[in-house]
Image (tube, rainbow, N blue to C red):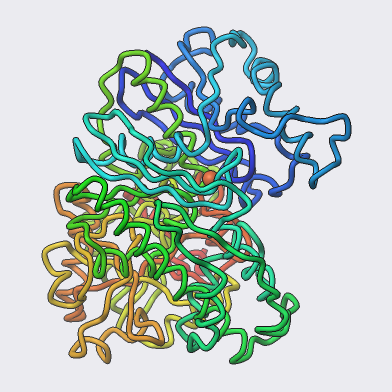
Length: 546
Ligand SMILES: [Fe+2]
C-alpha cells in the first residue's frame, strides 16, 4: 500500500510517505518554504497544506498522486466541535473544523489527480500515538501522548500489543499540560507553539519557588487523567516583553512549571504502568520534546525503557497517520530506523551546486580527518551530509560542529544562530564512549533526553555543559552513522575529547538548512570556517584567496 501522511491542522505542516509498511520519506514544509514552523498556529491557516513536502515525498518514490492508496490526515473534524453559525466563535474553532472537513478537496487541488475519496481522517492523538508505538522497535509498549490539543483532548494513554492500540485514558480539554506550558512560554516573552524549549532551558537558572501554587492548580485525577485550573501568571511573575532582559522571577516561573510538569508526567506514567505492567514506554506529542522531563521520567519512572519519536511534535503526526492507515489497510508496519528521512543529493549534484555558485572546493582524501583538523584548530564547521532530519533536532546531517573543549564556542555558536546566550548547545558522542562522560538514559540517538556530565569531564568540555551541569546528548552508533563515527574518532585523536559540539545548521530565526543552496547561504552569512557538503570541503580562507 502507498500511504501519504499529512499534518496540516495546527502548525508544523509535514508530509510522510509509507510504502508497503516502510517509511520511505518524511519532511516538514518549513524546510522547503524557509518559513519557520511552516505557518502561524491560527485557525485561519488550517487550509495551508504541506504541498511542497508532499510533492517531494511522491517524487522521491517516483509516484504520482493517482497511485496513492490513501492519504492520512492527522485530525478528524468529525470529533471536533461542530462549526456553528458563527465561525468566529470560540477563537475561530468552527473555521478550523470547516477547513479540516474540506481537506480532501484542498488536497485534490494541490495534488491534481488525487482521488479526494482516498483521504482518511485519523484522530490527532491516534496519529501521535501511532508515530510512537508503530515507529518504535518494540512489539508491545505503553503509549503516552501529551500535547497542546487535538480535536477535544490533550492527552492519550494506551497500550500497544503487536501494533494494536488500546486507549486506556484520554484527558479532555480545556485541561492541557501542553497549553499550560505554551501560556508560560508566551508569558515569558517567547513564541508560543515554538519556543517552549527556551522555557525548559531557562528553568535551569531558577528555583521552583511557585511549586506549591502549581501543585494546587495542576493535579492528576487517579484515573489516568489530570486537571489544570486557571492560573493567573501575572501574580507569579511579571510578563516579559519580547527582547526584554529576563530576571530571576522569570527563571523561577520557568523552573516551577517545569518541575510540576515532571511530577505530573511521573504520576501519569506510574498510573499507566499499573494498568499495563509493560517494560517499555513510547511517547509522542509536543510535550515529549521536553528532554529534561523525559530524563526525569526515565530515571524516576517505572518503565525500563523510554522511546521518544524524533518528530514528537505535530510534524510527526504525518508519519503516525500514515503508519496507522497503512496498518489498517493490512500492511505489516516496520519500525523507523533513522530520522534521516528528508532530502539528499548525490556527490555530483553537490559538486554542480558549488560550481554554479563559483565556490572553490576541495575533495579531501578523508573528509573526517580534514574536518577534524578544522574542529581541532577551533574552527566552526557547517556539516551537510546525507538526507536531512525529520523533526527539530540536528543529528549530524544538517549540523554546525565545533570543539567542545572551548567554552567560548557556546557564545560563538549562539551568535551565529542569533540565539539567547542562556541556551545550551549539545554534545555528540560515540555510543560506546557515552557512559564514560555522561550519566543518564543511553543510548540517545535522537537527542531527546538530558544527561549529567560526569564531574571529571565538566571542565574538559565546557562548551556543552549547561548551567545545571547537564547536557543533551546525541549518541552515534558506528553501524548507523559510519562517517560521523569516524569524525568523532578523528577529533578525539587530535583533542583528546570524545565529544563534539553539535547544533542545528541554521541562522537566526530560520528553519534548519535543507538543500545545498540553504547551506551556501548560511555559510555565506555566518562566521563559519568550513562547509563540508557531502565529500566536498569549502574553506572560508580559500574563498578569500579567490
Ligand atoms: Fe499535537
